Image (cartoon, helix red, strand yellow):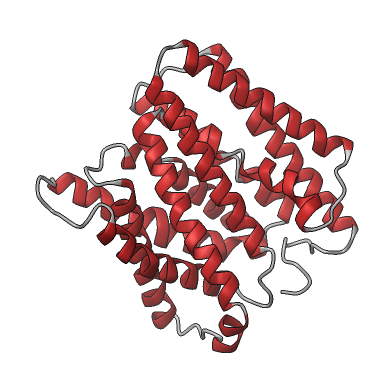
Length: 304
């Protein structure tokens, strides 16, 4: 259990640092997303071949349409998030991005016929107040680019929420199978998208950018995904939910230390409202699902 928690913490810290790397890559957002998907998928393919993990073709076939939808949303999720890093600070983009669980909670009554409880409504209101704090701060600072960055961050949150919702409809598929197919299909989708929009050109690209790009693909995608799906089976679901907040918190701290991004009191308040509300909502949801017998002690659904 201790090794599993260390592994989970490591994956979250790696994901928390991605904004710092992306900020220094001289590629467009869609190009970065493409390379990330290609390198990440290649890494998982090689790993599955070395470890001789069997891929269930029938399971993939039965979930194929949902996997395609997940993959496309995942691709745009990355593009919008990386664009947000270009227009605003890593901390602001990350906080906006973490509205995704709140969006899922808001849509759940319409999609999954779940009831909106007092706790859920309170979390949604708190998150919206947090977003107003951040948006108001950026507007008052006179930064038009920051507002664009916030909008891109919210777009990324919407696409990430879509990924979460679509994944809830997947049945009898392992984590590594789901990740591999989603990364692979995302790469196949992004190839024509990049060719039709930004194109592929290596003019003016530095060696450092290529190195950072490969790091994002191998470390932040392939290795981090592998570690994550290898350890979550051995950790209670509520613990996984708690540890997941190492990602945004570490992103904010690292951006302040490494990129010297300033954080105002109003922004801190907005971040606390958003991250705190998503944290409470996830813990509350996990508790409800556990009481209903939908989640086991290891966080794996009974169907799995």
